[in-house]
Image 1 (spheres, protein in one colour):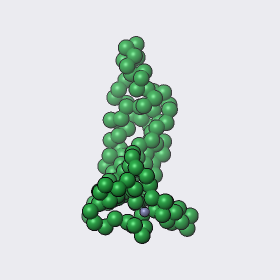
Image 2 (tube, rainbow, N blue to C red):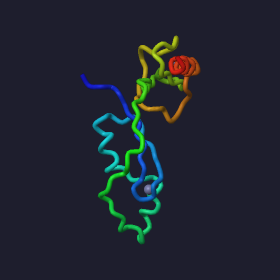
Image 3 (cartoon, helix red, strand yellow):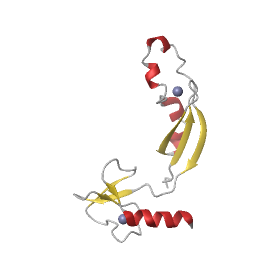
Image 4 (cartoon, protein in one colour):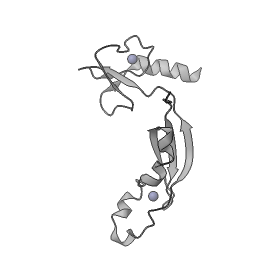
Length: 123
Ligand SMILES: [Zn+2]
Ligand SMILES: [Zn+2]
């Protein structure tokens, strides 16, 4: 059975030493992204021809690695704008819904779900 656990990894750039964070990674990707992901802080610098000789075959340092809560499934009813992410929410969509596995960029998050999640975390 495949694990649904996702990981948040904080990387420290090997060039500029700034940190950046990547979320919702499967474990098999956690050790690939330090090689594959350009540092957002350096990204503009890399456009600079004088700095195009930077070594690109090096790894970002993994500064922090943490397991995410399995609360990263978001559902909303088709045509609605409210996202739910707590299965015990009284309005958790069970049919005719759209589901994503990352924090939605648009729309609103359900207040009841937020309250339930907060209670779970402070328990
Ligand atoms: Zn950098
Ligand atoms: Zn809800």
